View 1 (cartoon, one colour):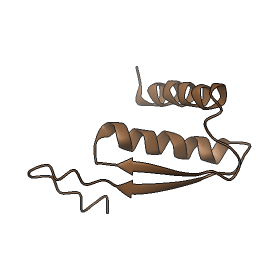
View 2 (view 1 turned 180 degrees about the horizontal axis):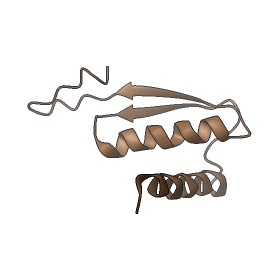
View 3 (view 1 turned 45 degrees about the vertical axis):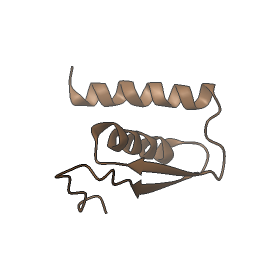
Length: 78
């Protein structure tokens, strides 16, 4: 499976969950805690793609969550 196909599938599933559960409303400001892992970064990327396509306006705020893991350097995320 190509990266593009995976991204489209994930975007579709996230969009469907947002719509089905009414997770985002007009004017919402959503904080996404980004730790540097693939899961939090992926969530931010997918929500940003939805934000650009959505029929409503909402804001995303990325916040670096430093978990103080030994050897972890989150400087690029800050």
